[in-house]
Image (cartoon, rainbow, N blue to C red):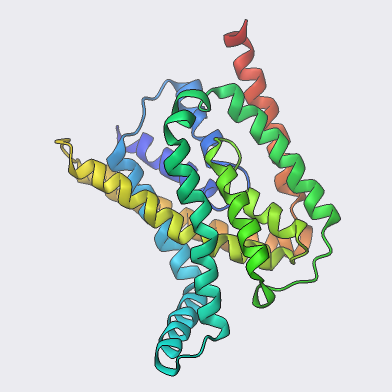
Length: 269
């Protein structure tokens, strides 16, 4: 992989990781349009770590509060609001971990077709628009219940289907449950942290068991580009949804899904 490919793919990953538009759908385009090969495990680890650092820095106040809450719970033997939120994040992550372990092989064989990505991009994009339109938007993250946490966690498991968008489906679920756009987005970002850590750890473990030579310069570039683009997208996304809602991303997903359908027509024929 040359430097230009590393920069472009890391930029795609960073821009799409936290937006409700499906990173897997976008990562198809370099291979479909330019014939670029798969970037490999080392590159995947680098871009995921860059995205992880971006969301951790953005949410550092929330994370610090949860760590302090857990410490106070340990000291006072009394569960507090921030410790409860930290426990809720663990519960919300469990469905994705369980179904990921159970269905990983089936998904890799049956659900990584381009037409699957095109369909999920369209269907779940329209569902996001419906949820944003119908949501009561009356709950804040501080009022998150265990039942709602489990519902959003189960929704996150659907993101195992390529094209669904992890952030998109979790925000959709939160909006359907009546949370504000900002609360839905913030909780979705928090949920991404254990998921990215788990995915990066598995990839790093797999990488450690192989004898692949690592070229560090493109990996460092990928890490920096992924970090910078992911952080900027999170900041801009929160500003956009407070003014315009989710509809710019709904429209974009419809266009993207239609574009994928157009690209696969020659393959189907």
